[in-house]
Structures are given as structure tokens and as C-alpha cells.
Length: 137
Image (cartoon, rainbow, N blue to C red):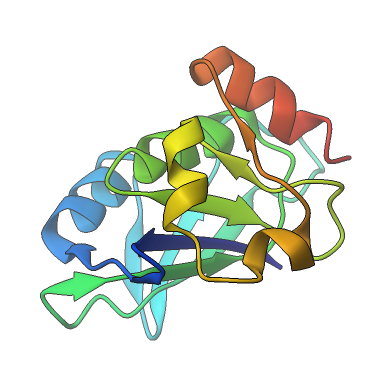
């Protein structure tokens, strides 16, 4: 499972649900119980193309998103845009490092999170984010 969390000063950061929904719908997401379902267009025939993004979209804000891993560049680019909505960190317990969009995000993480996951790697742009996420495999 991959986790995308938003933090500010060690506390959960609530990002506007409407902004998250806007990005997801723009990617073809279909609302489902407990989140949204997406079919990624860049998957070769015979490969898994569907991903479920678990998120509580009922409230005005959210601070946590989870999803099953899927090797898909279009998914990576969507995650990059979602991360731009706040002080976000993308991680999985199996990865060598978590990913942030900027160095400043690390100071917002809760005490002990960087120690538990390893120091986050900040991207220098969308292409770098895709490269870092691809390296998780």
C-alpha cells in the first residue's frame, strides 16, 4: 500500500476535498464507496490498469490518501499533482525512502516519522518525481 499524507507543524494538514476531487475527476476517477476508482490509460494490454484510491471524500478536508501500488506513469503524474495541494509525503514501508515535493516538507513531519521511514527525498520537478517513484520498484 502507498500512503500520501499531508502535514503542517507535526499535525495533520487538511487540504480542501474539492481540490482533491477536482484532480481525481480530471483524471477520470469514478466515485466508489470509500474513495475513487481509476483506470490508468497507459497500461499495456493484459496488465492491471485499475487502481483504487482510498480517501474520505465526504468532509470539507482530508489529510490522508492510500492506494494500491501500480506501475503507471499517468498515476505518478496524478500523485505529483495531488502532492502539490499541501505539505505532502508519499511513502510505503517497503520503499528505501519517502518522497516529498520540496525540502521544506520534512520540517512539517511528525516527530519520529523521518526516523521510521528514512529521510525523505525531495523532487526537483515532475520528471524527477516520476524517476524517484519508478525507482521504488
